[in-house]
Amino acid sequence: MATVPNKLLDPTRVGKPSLALGLVGLFSSLGVLMSNTTEEELVAAGRGKWSAPGVPHKGWVCIDIEDLGEPQTECEMCESRTIRYVHHMEHPDYSTILAVGCVCAGHMEGDLDAARSRDASMQSRASKRSRWTTRKWKISKNGNPTIKADGFRVTVYERSNGWAATVSPMGGSGVIHGRRNYPTMNQAKLAAFDEITRLQSANNG
Ligand SMILES: [Zn+2]
Image (cartoon, rainbow, N blue to C red; front, side, top):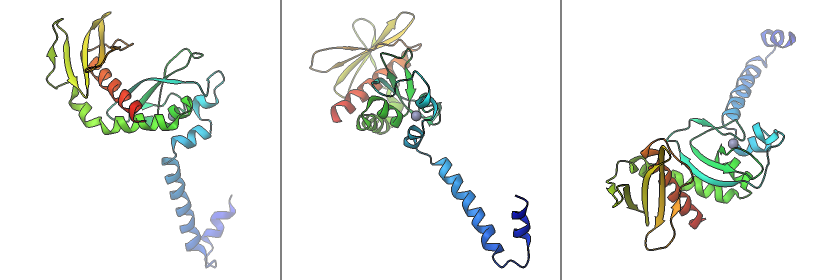
């Protein structure tokens, strides 16, 4: 558009300064819009796997949650958001577990409130989680690190060249065995912490 600069530079145009300012304002507000694009809008816009063939939009189940400590991984569904609080989602018709953000998770499982509740629980427990692995863990009679916390007993143990965790309600019955193995003892401890967070958010939500 060669005519636009000419008009802007035309000294006879009284409206020149306000037009230039208007353009600056337009571009800066576009910038704000782009950086504040919500995950909701990315879902609605069909970003990433939301428009990929063969990826189910509903029927997913959250099997795990994880606080990465800072935003550092891309949501594997909208592929457009860097996330800190991860919801691991599984689907019977999809071969891999997807690590996604709160809003994508909510849409995938058809329950936005449940996803928001898990996310809020992770946020409220973040500082406690940062101290979790260095608390005073005892050694069980089987020789495994164990601790009582938040109404649960957590035990971590070596399994298949890695570490696994169990979480059992105090004074209740039933032991929850973590499905995944982790390379380190601390990762298994953190997975157990996140399982308690998930259980708490499920009870509150
Ligand atoms: Zn997403």
